[in-house]
Length: 168
Figure (cartoon, rainbow, N blue to C red):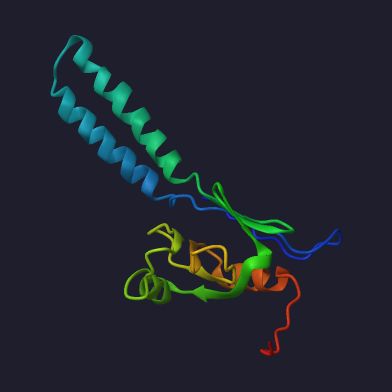
């Protein structure tokens, strides 16, 4: 739900951290649907059936919403962290910021079966990270982000210096 991209500080280079949480408006919607489901299970019965559906369905809904919001994206000094996955910045060949149409293209027609994908449908933007690692069969990563241009620029700036002139 929160994103904390930060700028250049006096202490050092920019950093990036973002949690790919569900939008705020999905919480009331999910809880309303859960309440209706619990009421359907209750159906005016007395005794144990009067409160158990609410005591089970509503906490399960909250747990599901928190689970959907668990993914974090961060850039440290040496790697990109996406949930449990770690990508050393040294293997990044190119980074492309994607809008909603670009993300749809990369994940649809342009999809590759070995690509690493962490996408959230409620987040329009993403970055495509092309890899240059002969030991890894993964051609690229696609990661959802609310700030694709900023993340792409930061990753491109953090890559170790390479010969970017195109020669050899």
